[in-house]
Length: 117
Length: 112
Image 1 (spheres, each protein chain N blue to C red):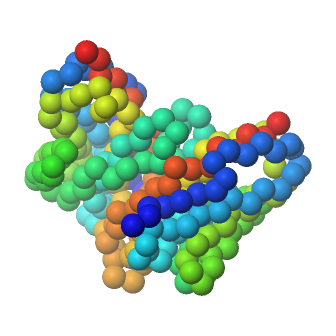
Image 2 (image 1 turned 60 degrees about the vertical axis):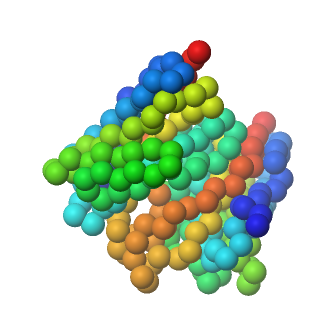
């Protein structure tokens, strides 16, 4: 049973460019959340997708957008990249708990290391 | 969301018990306490979760006093492979969905 997978592993972009990161959730999971982790900091919540819709959003500008596909996989898009976007981008999957309640355990992928020059 | 405070770093030796304490003074009634572990260049990994008193699993114990304003993660007989960052999180039991709020964590270094 594959866990959460992310691609690519590493990525180098220049300022102003756009980037797309991809995530496949753990088998059986229907919810994908994205986090940004700067060096030396804890992960920061970007947004969460369930049933192909954005359900929650953290304090990130609308340059950060996402998508979830019918097979539950997800993409994170970042437009107009700037140096401060350099970070490890983590995808986490879980079962949706918005209706039933409960803080569900999240399974994280290995991340995509994005470097903006 | 409840804010958490943890020590920035801790050092230990192999075979010792390590206790990491987290302060969360404004924890809400519906909040659970969860601990994650993260190795370099990897995503965080769930360790343990609790609401009150004591919870134990195969890797750790979580002690929560009656007022729930703090919690202590206990790692028995640590090894070199336990060197990692440990995050204490406090989150909603209901209606909060799956959003996790991480602090800066505690860097645990285990030596021989």
